[in-house]
Image 1 (cartoon, helix red, strand yellow):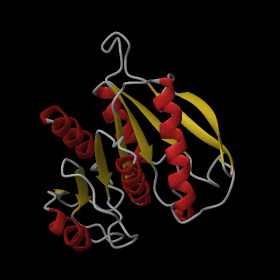
Image 2 (cartoon, rainbow, N blue to C red; image 1 turned 45 degrees about the horizontal axis):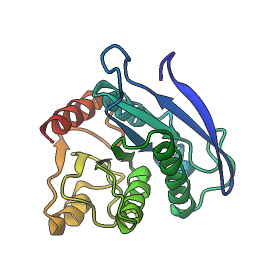
Image 3 (spheres, rainbow, N blue to C red; image 1 turned 180 degrees about the horizontal axis):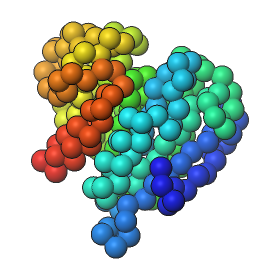
Image 4 (tube, one colour; image 1 turned 30 degrees about the horizontal axis):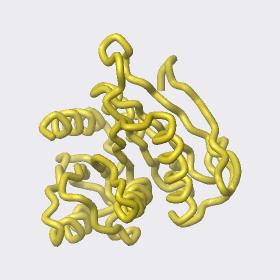
Length: 212
């Protein structure tokens, strides 16, 4: 993302996992306020941790003092293994979560994702809740409702979706969110990849985070 991006590798069940960490400005934030793990879109359709929406989420979190950490899912970039329909990917994200929790004990942990990444993060949140260690908050952009069996998520989850998303229709997101009474932030005119609308993702995330 920038000259300060720190690449690192984890040993996962399927082999090495390629990761990248971006820290907030040390002068503005002498100590980070938290950590955000960010999941990328579907690996079989070109999704990587270098996706523009994923980068936008990372920049947004860094701007509010969070360490932003991305990971290439199995079989993507320098990560070993093959796509596992969300099961192994959730295992790998849980491993990353445990690694960063051990490195930064006591820091709040946020989970964010785009498209397929929202499915992975929602599943991880279920695991964390069962263990009594839920993430501080979720940010789901281009939520995978209707594409994958999205579990319910906490009421403070930030949902951002494009009005004209033809990959994951907005109506499917409403159908999933409605029974949970979850608000959905709709970006007018935005497609699935938020072409020319990326700035709105950062703006809404920062504003919603400050509101608590």
